[in-house]
Image (tube, rainbow over all chains, first blue to last red; front, top):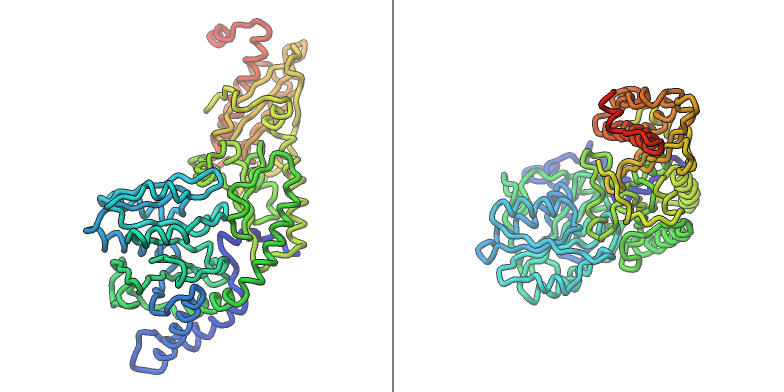
Length: 402
Length: 136
């Protein structure tokens, strides 16, 4: 077993060796510009790009013409949200999203607010899910766009995006879904799923970083305004020379995901459940987010009375992430956990374990043992744990804040 | 983020972890910080008949730098008089542990913890803390 154990697959995944193998010839041998129409180098690159487009389209059961290459999820979300908002702004200037979206969505919405749009940020319930009722109540005659993620990156919960799609379609509102954490992990079929714009990225599904895709529905046709100009590539949606090797990698990653997702999810779910069983016995450990409506890859746990950063330091043989952003100067705990209504202590004490294709049972057992020992060690150090054991309700304590 | 070797040493082998009986007359207890801020330090001193701090204990909820800062000050206060202990400055702690700017608050908290423990001890012994400050 190699240390540290990588359990941060929601941050990024390694490139599958099969994917890397497909990419390499497009760096050295078939290096042509896909936009070169006058020679075989260009034709070869274009052929590879279109084959990959077919694989990414197939992953979500879309038409290849509905796939627009981007540099990744952040660009995809920017293009979808700014592109749709700007195109449809004469119809209205109201946008709805929710508080636990990725910053690529939240910051984009904030930017639109500075340009005269009005944005409603829906609260989530304590299980991390958006309620359809709250969404319905927030809809207005001038609402032009709803943007709700498929899977939350921190807590792995699956939002009711299929129902939201139905609702938006019935009202004639554009629906964008950031499916970055769902792509390759959840079956997506845009023939059934009434989504208009859907963001994907390669590096969360064993493809390379720096390449993503935006699905733009053609039937019924959805319009967006381009955000990057210069040459009119990608049918004018996104100019710029195509990164052939990256695209080939994304295509192969999507093809493998489609072929292996079902069996892979069974295996990963068994490992996640093993991890959950192993650490649920720890006192005062709480799972963040709904356990049922959740991808099998994610377990986010708060260990009460243990501070997140010190726990991360204690488990340096694990590559995991903490919900606490204590390393930044802000000392703010995770905004996602705060949105769930978690107390500050719990929000500061969370660890996100995300499993993937190369996670093994041995690694999970190692993780369980390490977490148990280190949580105990840090609790022996924790004055809060001592107070808890003495029966003191910490919420009643007057803290000398600094 | 990268921690200095001294922070890692204190974090992995914390000195003087534990608690004294809070009600013991010879013990002063300081509890500073707040869970909302991500760190809480409890520092206790045991004062001998000669007025010197003969022992110290700590428990800290917080990041590695917070744990290291409190561990370090339990070593530093031993053998000092109350007056001397309260002259320990956060800058000395930060310097000793090579804390980066974002972790300076940990050293401030450790300094505050010493002051709070000393104040608690003095209160128990009926000393007027405010007057003491003026004299100092």
